[in-house]
Length: 266
Image 1 (cartoon, one colour):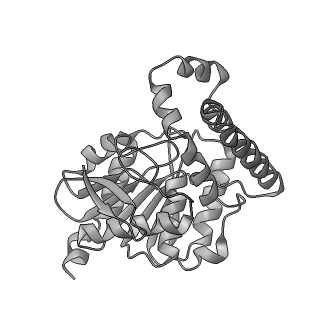
Image 2 (cartoon, helix red, strand yellow):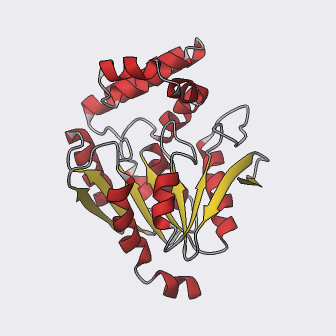
């Protein structure tokens, strides 16, 4: 992987593959550049695809204190690496990061996001506040495994599956990035869709959810699409929170590829 320095001096590791108009993939909770590789390979026949380890993960560095603004700077540095006007796709909290970055002025051609995990509504905001408090208690106590289990449980992974995951070699990898769950939590604020701030998102934006995802995910993505000046919504039949790369790749290829070479040339 190559590296680039973000504005605060943090080293961000990234990988480029393919040729064509640039696309940056932004991973969600507990993910790294490796997590995004299957989708990157599917898109690389038409695009130059950038995957990266978000700060605090994998081969990237970190800072003593986290701030959403620093992650926005990281994404801006990667956009500059492409030498063009990139399209950006983010999953979960990575989608929230992509939107926050564009609202803050990130030069991006088009955005697509899959189920940013907002929880609007009175019950949703109470749920988010409770999860935030529990997450910070676990991390403060050094219970990385407990933090990972909390995240998996509240996102719908059955208890039996979590128990089996704890016994698998993958669990150590998840624990190694457990502290970044607090970063994702900060990106989502109080759980409401930040409609006022996202009124500044100028890019054409595709907001996607899975047809088999939770009712909360489906309704919140519709609210998000309505809050974006150039947003539109799409439901992927048969998909859940665990998005299949083969299902989203053709959607992104169509949305990002439309007139992409003409826009790149201009």
